[in-house]
Length: 184
Image (cartoon, rainbow, N blue to C red; front, side, top):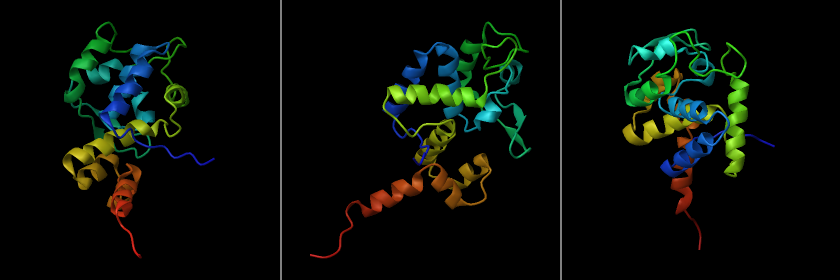
């Protein structure tokens, strides 16, 4: 079976998925993780390693991306209220997304399981950890139509990679072929 992770393309899909995550054992953490991911486009490996102090005092903290080793700014103004609500009873040295194991952070493969379990309940088979990043990119592109900014955010080398990554290429092809017909 081919596994093709896709973005959540509609506001309804986002709300349904967020609601499903809120019903899980660690609903508050899982729902916030989802909101955090779809609002900044980070890779999951970078998200899970954040500490509370990394996001408490600045709307534009910097991280070093695990994959590229490049310094990257985070833009958190759009979710500042949700961040403050989530971390209000946490210490700066706490993991932003703690695991059940004492003192550790949630792992990427655990996030994958959380997301795919929620997806199954919604009869979705195209969800993975990259869904959050792709959802951010898809909706950012739909709002601003600026592929160059997304290339920069995602650190991609070409527009085609970015468009394919967020599912825009598939959407454009489907739209162009919808009414295209030759012959009698």
